[in-house]
Length: 137
Image 1 (spheres, one colour):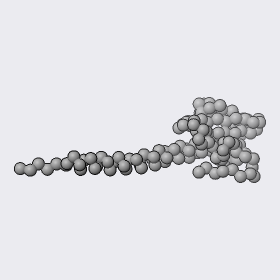
Image 2 (spheres, helix red, strand yellow):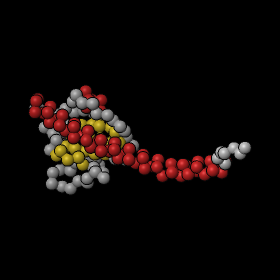
Image 3 (cartoon, one colour):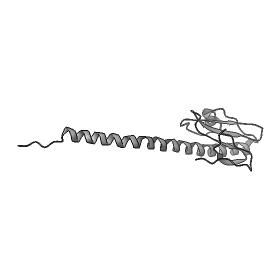
Image 4 (cartoon, helix red, strand yellow):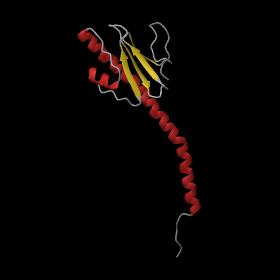
């Protein structure tokens, strides 16, 4: 009676093949996750923009928020950090600037009260209206 089984060489080939496939799959997966967090940060800024506009229309002033926790508390939101630091500053009483910068400073987006377009600029600040700003990659 002959026993049927896989040989050691066959098992080794399968393990090597899976390893080679993982070499290509893991970086693509992490890149896709990173891109999704960047899009999420852009969308969160638009939500913050809407909340700031509601606060301004109700009380006549915007709220400064130094970090994500302050944004969630002051604006009654539930923004998830996902590797980003969020902040909103008030250059004047009737304007605000909000930023979402990755914790390793490799990517950032910004938005102002006068422009609901999310800007992806090297300094993470939106230029004045009428000047060009790099769009998100």
